[in-house]
Image 1 (cartoon, rainbow, N blue to C red):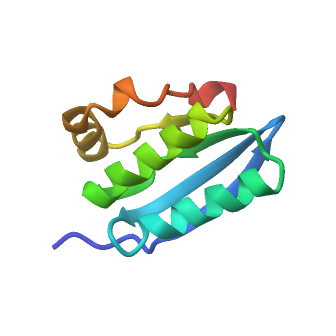
Image 2 (cartoon, rainbow, N blue to C red; image 1 turned 90 degrees about the vertical axis):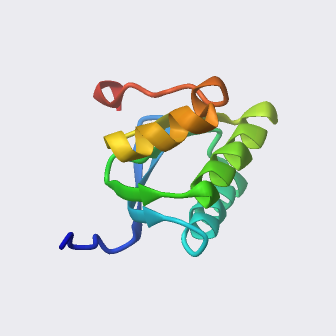
Length: 110
């Protein structure tokens, strides 16, 4: 039986970029929490945000909707990038065509 990773969001300023590290599952319950944190960060003046999905263990369609919300911020002039993480997350993002929506960030540069 797989052990569940508790959901959490960590904020880590890295130079002029805010890294939002998401841990656990991104689903109908948690995706709005991630979106609220990112929206609040933009309201606080952050205009360059990287959402790090490497510790995410599961993502459903609510996570895909979250990424499209990040794309809207990107279209409004906020630099939004992602780090896609586990094969399970990459598969969801690939199937949803998210690679065409948001650019990827190089974790080594953060």
